[in-house]
Image 1 (cartoon, rainbow, N blue to C red):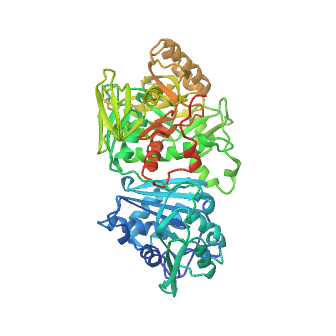
Image 2 (cartoon, rainbow, N blue to C red; image 1 turned 90 degrees about the vertical axis):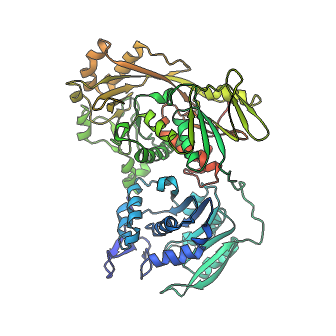
Image 3 (spheres, helix red, strand yellow; image 1 turned 60 degrees about the horizontal axis):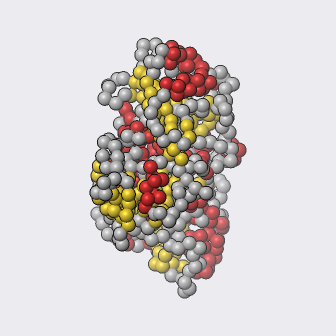
Length: 627
């Protein structure tokens, strides 16, 4: 459930938000707008301090109702000298609901357009990180839900400004204690400005002990004083990990024009890179990403394992990209029903109490009405995934490759890479140079394995596996549509019931799949795989299978096959292989889930940005060798 907020009738428009948990107001008696602008924005020397910078990062303790973020975003947008990118990282142990955030902002008309955009993305705030995207990716809000000390251990970045906010030290001492300030200090560099409204002696002493030099400055009524300062310890700080180094945008070659390669290219291009995407085929998305239509749905597990958590990060990223870039004919946010045929999915027990509302935003037990729409009995074991749907992968690839700064080149089969003193050269089979750049990203699916081995003969063989998959599909015909569910279903194979056919206005197809054959790098279609898909449909959706049986019996279905690339962990492989050489591959059957997230993670690491997901999850994606 969202944090309970009481709205006090104190004569102000909309009332004043009050926390029963802490027995304190969310903002000062005279309203929070002046506090946000004077205490935090101006207290950190903004907007003057960020003028002309490539990017600026603000760290806030205590997101509350989001007012400090909204004010900072508005100031960024109004400033002609603003940095290209604004990163706002905020921690919050008890997140407010989207409706309360919007209600809080309605007393400030100039903030309402920003608050409405924030409101639209404030869903599913389970413990962990949530990356929210605004201004075409130029303003990134990373909400870290949990105890500040714990969540900041999962980040590795250097803040330019720090807002210390939260309920008073008397009401909420944990967010103002020494250990919290130590966690904040780990995210600072010398000269990082810090600001807060409290001048409590305990706060000043703890900040000083952590290396912050602070002073009291005149406040705004009813506060006589505020606190400002900077991180400037008298000692040389020892950090468990070296500070990340930002790489200036330059040139990059991405090998592979599928989901993975296109996502990487778009993320880098949005940050100013000039990216050349090379592919052996004569059109983008010619490999596994040429799937006629695929499902986008989270993975659910009782222990909320890394695959489950990563799938939620990825789905949020993909939905943001699809909503911004795709036409209605290329995707649908329809929801997906998961029928637990072989492995009934159970949600973590921790979701049932304090986080029930946020959990239901993602996945909840399917009700009898939805089961009936699929022809399933009311006692069938199933989950309803709200933030899910179908996507035509090629549409997403095309949109990403259309990003300014990206150049795609087909019929360019890469066979060899060679490293010079400052860049990589990329050659074809005849030894002709195709391109050169300071950064190369291998995103050629299973083909990345051979390219990586050729680039660095001393390295081990990457643990990447070829997995062939075949889908079966057919056109909607009179009588067919009535036998199909109104939304996609997965769990034992899958069915996307109504995917528009490209170039055929008004024509729809059903798509069913997929077979799963390990260690087969050949993509030729086979009739027996269509029968395999049908047999799975008979278990997944018996009524639908009965209606389509004649088409399979007479061979009237059409087929598509592709070769996916997976890792033993079922997590993607993302990370550096050698100086200037990265890999982004191994997404298995979840390319739609992982591609956008991996593109953003790779760009964040190169640019020393806050990560879009927890550090331990990012570390779990490190490429592995065959043992």
